[in-house]
Image (cartoon, rainbow, N blue to C red; front, side, top):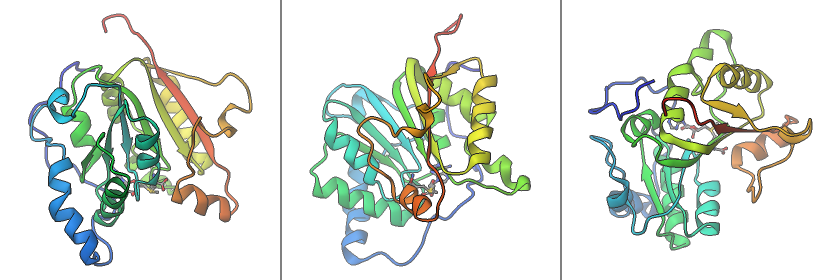
Length: 236
Ligand SMILES: C[S@@+](CC[C@H](N)C(=O)[O-])C[C@H]1O[C@@H](n2cnc3c(N)ncnc32)[C@H](O)[C@@H]1O
């Protein structure tokens, strides 16, 4: 595992999933044009976090935030923290911008692209918490390799997390939960923080159920909440 940002991003990385959906309303298009540039994280080179935020503070990332409801909820609840949300789907980003605008959030920055570009450019040991909530499940065996949880992405997540930092993964898809537990157990940088058998059934503190979770529950699937802690490894 390298301990440095990888420098100029290696483009293209192939994104599996949509970038555009139905046409935006005038209000949403206005937010993308006027507010997005003010909040956008530049990943053309190493990210300077001191320059990015108004004040220093612990840093939390949310990867694939959908409409940004959970991100905005956390950012409003934790005004002393800084947040970066990543979502390549323009309609989701427009919803999140509306949430940021409506709630007057000053501690949120955004990337409308593949989260791997951000991970590549973040400083080593700079992030306190990463949320990956209901990532695209890619349930067919031949598509499993598209899952966001994989060895390469875990190496980058381990690199950017501070020792003691948390990686939270939620999913309603048992095969993806097993896959994630397998990958994380094999990774020397993480330990699964489960103190009892009920642990993975209990929502995170301060949880706001995401849109995708609500759909899963309506359709009879069970949420799983996994929390991994970044270990302090020799050589870190
Ligand atoms: C199943 S949805 C879940 C959305 C939201 N987290 C929720 O729980 O409602 C997965 C999201 O991940 C986003 N996504 C997929 N690949 C991504 C990537 N490489 N980087 C960042 N986001 C990604 C998709 O655009 C989509 O919005």
